[in-house]
Image (cartoon, rainbow, N blue to C red):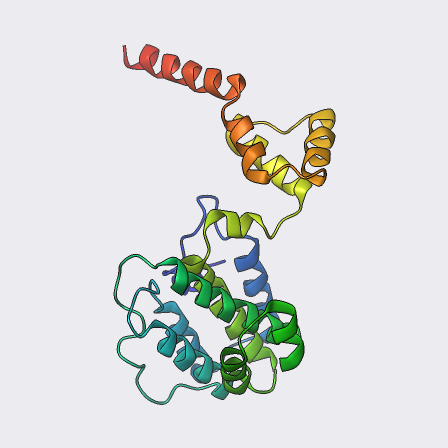
Length: 231
């Protein structure tokens, strides 16, 4: 992804290694669309202005953006300043944002309104607003909706929410790589996955690996190396 495209994600924390898989998928979809008309770029710019959802009119502004996606244009000015207040988002607002995300995803997946509500437990009023705003699907709307979902996740999701989107094997590999700096052996991988499938929680497994002697000793060795270099 070039610098111009990355500017669109200025309100999303980019991983150290560059755009993540979801961002690359959105960029690949954009490649299929070809050159974007100015009115589409204007709507995408709105998404780039979303800030933490602690703004007192946060969800009014989310609906404003949804309507802009549905109309594929944004002829006026955004409500208030499009989520420009910074602060902490409480759990209740986080849950509402997750409902918007689930509903937009259902729309992206081609599901009908009734199916979306039934599968995700989404409130009828919220689901009706999202589906009414987005209207009929087309590729430009899909690209914008994908970008909005990714952006809202930045503020609504905590680490465990992101982790829950991946399977047990991927989770175990990621824990070993992040905490121990290595891939699990085939036996370790099989054993850990079986533990999770037998009912062990991911949090419990993570704590065990994090507290392991291998992890503690690895950090102590790094402390010793730093002291040697600085001495």
